[in-house]
Length: 95
Image (cartoon, rainbow, N blue to C red; front, top):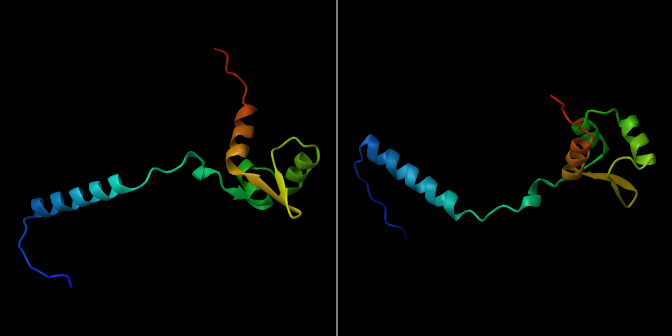
C-alpha cells in the first residue's frame, strides 16, 4: 500500500518538481520510428491531402501516375509516399 503524506512546498519548489517529473517522463519515452507518420489513407483522405478531387485521383491511379496499393480491392495510399510524390513535382527556383 502506498503511504500518503502532506507537505508544504513553495511555488518555486512545486514548479521545479513538476519540471523535473516532466523531463524524466519525456526522457523515458522510447524513440519513435521514422515511419510513424507513414499512415495509410483511403481515397477521400488522400484526395484531401493532395488537394485533388476524388475523380481526379482515380484518374491518376488508372494512369499509374501516383503511388498507391490495393488491398482486397480497396485503394490505399501511403501518406509518406504521397508527400514525396508532391515534393518530386516541385520546380527548381532560379534566381
